[in-house]
Length: 586
Image (cartoon, rainbow, N blue to C red; front, side):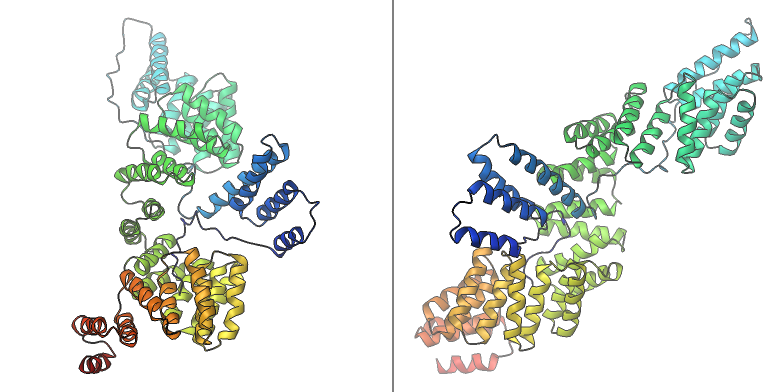
């Protein structure tokens, strides 16, 4: 029964407009003669009411009215900052299913560069220990550049020349760890620390192993010992940044990622995660800067593209968001969450037909992706007008999450559309248990009662929906339907017109107006609305009703044309016998 397209994002843009009794009461008292209440006081109070109830756009509108009177009002600026922060937090929560900015997971390995191993040269004319030290120094230089293979070869050769050098053995333990032999690396590190407790590279090895095992406190202890010994390492600083980020110690994370970049300016993962940290600190411009830095270093690194797309999406810059998300897709074809993001962005751009294939691909990759299933179901409903396929995918989403209020409402409306009224009512009730402010569920209950023939009971549910969201045009259509079935055609027309004020192209409101005017024998208006409805979506029923109205109005020629159109285009129409009879009479 719900004509509006319900997308999860989306989805980031779904807002429920709430008008509390308190808000209404305030307006009534103000209009009732308390002229001593200034506009400033009234608008600030309304802004606070809407802020408390989560309608941040409405709250900001009232603040703007006060701002125009006095741009330097300190209370306005303080309240604006508070509302903006709350709005951003709500947007992030609404977008969490498909548009999250998140740190690289700690288990993600930093791949060892596949560098060419340069020949290790030993000058046999020089002192063996001096050569061992030279090779050790060469290895450390390679290590600082991230060249593990060349570093490892030199540490190994250095130990062949001087097996008692703990510094070389500690460094060798680290490159052994980096090359994947964790057990041997740990054994070497422990051997070194037993005689040299301050060896930096042995501590680096142990700290890295603790990190991989998710023992982050011990990892930090070991890494701090490396720093206190006077050594440093860009990967170590990166891992420290990850740990602090996960602990939500964002300033500390920023310091460590920045230090990692100082040690290795072309380390794209450090730039990426520094961007995430700036985002967490609400420094959006620096976040964008470092995401772009990561892309400049490695144009095939998909994550910064995804997060730049996310930021632009949340800022409402959907074309720019799509540009970044499609760039990410070039390098990450099997990311179902990314595909949902792309679909959501096309939806925001008003191109649902382009969104649908991305939802379908996401479902093909991951048949448990809730957002992909839900949005694909909605696409079948609103793009393809295929309620059977819509029901299939939305029921699959329901089997994953049986508490999402929007899904429950959407599925309830599908059941209602197919005449399964009791099943629909059950789902609407479940939706309201999850969120008692979801106006669409109240609207659904209203339509269910109409189907049960309880039009008088339906009215209170439509009114409840409108008390939550005055822009719920479907609730106005429901009130129009209730009035129509009660034979109150003037009242029905009034409600259908209100529905069109909220959504000009509402097909069902236009149909309601056509039928209501036909009942009033206002054939001129009825004919106009029937033709408008048919221009949106032609059905044999509408063609038949228009033909009947034209015949009653005396325009038998036009009536005959529409009857003939039905006979030619819809030969299996369930009232084709009446069409044939009308044509015979005409």
